[in-house]
Image (cartoon, rainbow, N blue to C red):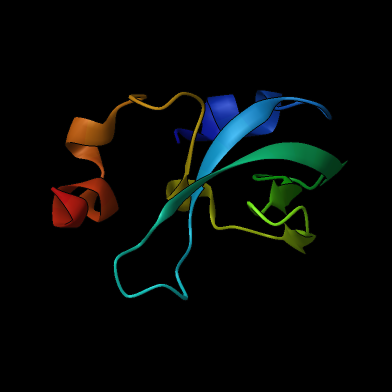
Length: 83
């Protein structure tokens, strides 16, 4: 995600996050739960929900997040590995 979009995220925004702990860089849907404003680039926390109803909070890297399912995936190396 480009920095301007990252810094414009708001609590409640739906995003798609690559799981860097997954060998296949799985793409999970989540919701922005908090934002810490910082000079240059904000710190964002995303709540991910699993199929079993559990949730977890992650602090993804900016380049591991997409606004939509097809948001610039052609330029995302993680998405390229999944194809």
